[in-house]
Length: 81
Image: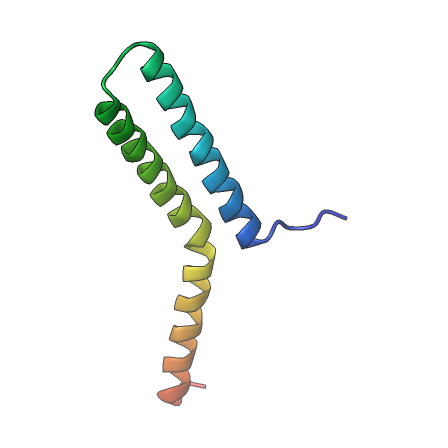
C-alpha cells in the first residue's frame, strides 16, 4: 500500500531542495569570483521564486477544498438543499 506524503513532509523537502540550490549557486559563483553581494542576492531571488512556485503548487488542493466547502456552506445558507 502506498502512503501519501504529508504536507509538512512535502514542505520540508521543498525547503531542503531550495537550500541545496542556494548552496550550489553560492559555491559555483564564488568559484568564478563574483562579488558576494551579487551571489547572495541571486541565490535569494532564485530560492524565493522556487519556494513561492512550490508552495502554490502544494497548497492548490487545499485551496480547492476550502473553496468547495465555502460554496457548500453558502448554498446551505440559501436553502438550496
